[in-house]
Length: 440
Ligand SMILES: [Zn+2]
Ligand SMILES: [Zn+2]
Image (cartoon, rainbow, N blue to C red; front, side, top):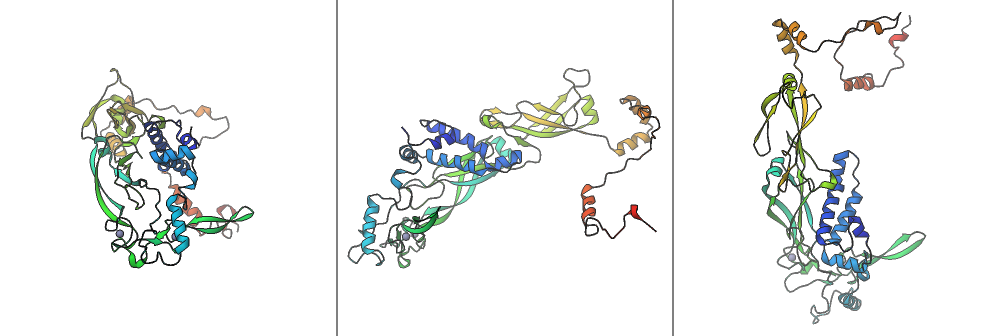
């Protein structure tokens, strides 16, 4: 029987769900609610709170120890542990010790470090760190061996993460007397309450390395920055925002028993030819489609064609044989039409999505029409093309005129606006008389 099911509800799984089920639910939801994803797909502002909630649920339920604590004690954790100043045996000893020697600069000579052992936070794996991986569509289509240079935090080697010189060690923090927490007054509704807060000097550990005892390498910070080149394989067809997990390649907190994982988040880069059309959210196991524009001449759009239309992401050429009028499968392809080449989209495991071609018909230009006119071909073409529309003068009511007008290039509307607002330094000038008000 679990104490609380909220985190399971967030992921939409049962409290007895397997690790695999939890992972699957998390991946689906994280993809769906990723803030970048949301804002890019429908233009609405991203709601990151839902994503954070999903992330939080995942971090708790994916860690066997944390999950067990959650199942037994709910989100507050067992007996206040997890917050600063939790009380287990070691803490009680520290408290006792701090009471005796707190503020006196550590244990008296001769006692060694026996009593002053630093308060241990519960040893768990460090939280995973995240890094984004920009990938080209070629890499995503073909799969790729990748290397990434990451800077990460590691437990300091020479002091094994204690922060102290050899033979020295951390001593009870002077600010909090080794408690790891201090108290602050806080307004809670109509009351002022004394609430515990994590000690800022020792960051809640209750112990602090004195400056003269500090490790030379890490200066007492207990960690060092390290550059590392990590190598991994980018599986073909990974979706936007999908994560590659490298075990133990993330940051390492000196309080943890093992380094955290490195989460590499896949971010496809824009491509000059293709764009990705992701599958619907509930089908994130499906391969994505690819989409591109196919520009046709007027002749091709009407009469069919046979030619190489593009080079695919793996270097293959794709040739289309579009039938001529009267042949089987013929149709006029108009600007705005979308046609599909099945099985030429993005990979996903052993399958491929489709390639969507958005048709754009390029109309012949003035130069072509002039050339036609020079060769005396205008009447011939007019005879071939669909007829012009008749001049329907008779739809004008009796007594109304028909005015002859000309067609001109439309002015850039941005320029007009500029003129309107800034031409005279103000929208319009009341002192200046408009053309309609000219009086002599
Ligand atoms: Zn402190
Ligand atoms: Zn060190």
